[in-house]
Image (tube, rainbow, N blue to C red):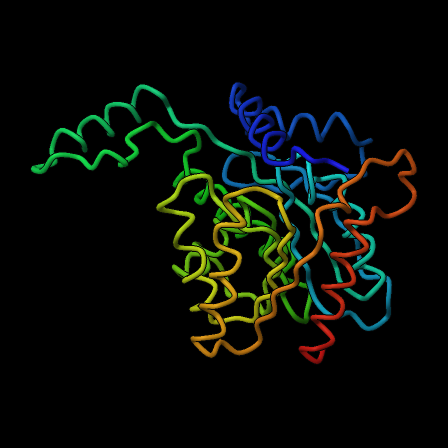
Length: 286
């Protein structure tokens, strides 16, 4: 069990931002898996590795796209691979990918923030945060949109439902992108601990959940981090008061985050997520 999840997560993000993330994370995946274990797809001008797990039943349900998170807890690429194999046994053709975290160009971001503060006619509020954000949200969302477009093209021959599963940063960015219509509308979205470590962006998540034109399974882990917990109750309340059809929030204890050397067994985390997803799709009549 990990009792320092927020600190561990933020520490990992800081480490990842100190390197050229887009190249290093994808290179790590190519080095970790043997040739043939991963599929290469073109995303713009870049070659991106994805893990595919074909449906293991004669009658397929459709395509499930899993966006792994850079967090060391939860839906990592390794855990996503376990989830992919579990869902393929239920009749889904699964594509697993990773969206790299992109950091701001410090000099440019500082100039933009200084200019914004200098153009303000009134005295800034003492609680106003003018610090440079650690993550470039716009660039990250654009990267996610390009990746999803490439995966949609790669899987266009597969019929059936379209389900997207994402955790953390990817879940928040996907909600925004889908709400803006810049990505294809899924038949359902599974949001696992959606958050973005920037208050103005994080505060929009609850409204995006409530206004989404597609069914949402909202999985929240207790004490995952303060950003996700800050919107968990609001996400549920906004969805219920707006009479959103087909919304469910599942609260799971973070005690299931554990370490095991038995890689051939699905972790407690994957068992919980798989059970929630399968139950949700059965509720939808799939």
